[in-house]
Amino acid sequence: MTTQMRASAREMRHMVGRYLHARNCPGYAVNAVRDAIMAAQAEGYDAVSYMEDVREHYAGARTSFVVELQGDEIVLDGANTPAPLLAPALIDELALAVAAGARSVRVHKVPGVTLFAALSEYAAVRGVSVTLTRIADDAATIAASAVPPRATDPAALAAGPAMQRILRDGYEMDADQFWRLFHESNEALTPDSELSRRHAGTQIYDADGNLLGEASEEVYQHLRSASGTPDSAVFA
Image (cartoon, rainbow, N blue to C red):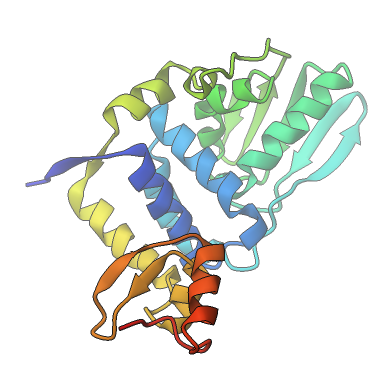
């Protein structure tokens, strides 16, 4: 029997981001890829499962298209890179294409290309619409146009209805899957140590390892200096 659970947007954000780091997704791309996966999941595409299915493709992956102009048509070649890794680049390319007067682009060599159909809200926040037509295997034609910018005050208004629902109610997930990915994502974390605490810069412990409280990085450095033990963040 499958047990369902609800995970908040914050929990999913941390889990997906850490999972991508643990699977050696290029660091500069993690946040953008994470947000695209979460947006597609919010719109009903099982993006988290697909994220796991392509786990072997993250290390050293490309995160951009080879862009060609074939006659009057813009063609985006994904070089067999899974769709989640190219989703942020797709929206950038669509925005550039629309600004140049194009109404559609063609993408090919993108496994999981149907994920792009679940990026309408993600794209709208960035000023473009996304509509997939003529989908075939790893290729699709994508119609695009400019859309009015969304209100951003308060920030939640920038999200569309699907993401607003997620911010309110969370994601419904298979519990076994969530916890499996959660534990795998923890591989991206460093072991607890003096160095990791110094990097975090917020937690202060006594000699027995009990958490005393939290402080800013500046206060933390001041306490280290004033204690006379600059190599230790532990205070009796």
